[in-house]
Amino acid sequence: MRYHVLTLFPEMVLAGLHTSIIGRAADRGIISLNAVNIRDYADNDYGKIDDYPYGGGAGMVMQAEPVYRAYEAVADSLEKKPRVLHMTPQGRVFSQEMAQELALEEDLIFLCGHYEGIDERVLEEIVTDHVSIGDYVLTGGELPAMVMIDAISRMVPGVLNNKESAQFDSFQNGLLEYPQYSRPQEWHGRRVPEILLSGHHANVEAWRAQQSYLRTKERRPDLLKQDNHKNIM
Ligand code: 6GU
Image (tube, rainbow, N blue to C red):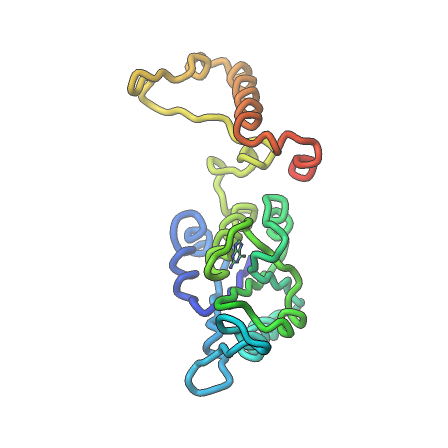
């Protein structure tokens, strides 16, 4: 998987993703991360890429041409036209199902806006998907791009090892994960559930399945509704 992030803050994206599991996957060449500074594609000598909105109103708008040039610099180097994901609270809300689907792509371009947004015309020209990470407003698309790259990368074969395997994750089967315990057997007067110490593998599995269900019912009852988990089962 090759990620290309069009952004005004390339160092933010690179710093955030070169640690832990995703950083290790990049070091091993399973994924790669190319952060492209839109400012490098300004059509003037001073790196200005925003201007006032036509019709008036607050804030500044990122201009079409620098965004388009940054996009072309990436897309022209690829054999196939990649999906271009525009990070916007106006997009479809990102999900585990979308992460699994996007993990099948060879290249993904993330377009991160700032200010009051990006000139609509370049969005019409290059964007294939408008994506949001939830119903709240952030100052820019970089954190959403980083969230999505983390979630997608976990679904790319070889990124997780056996122990970290995604197959038992919360959401992977439409339910939340069961609780986990480690040593000591008693902490602050709280004991590890006896069944986990029993060594009865089948009983442990049954208990965990029950805990997954109870926890989902308690914390995320919306996930138990037929319409909601049909897509992630
Ligand atoms: Cl993708 N961008 C911004 N700016 N805010 C958001 C978002 C994206 N998703 C939720 N809030």
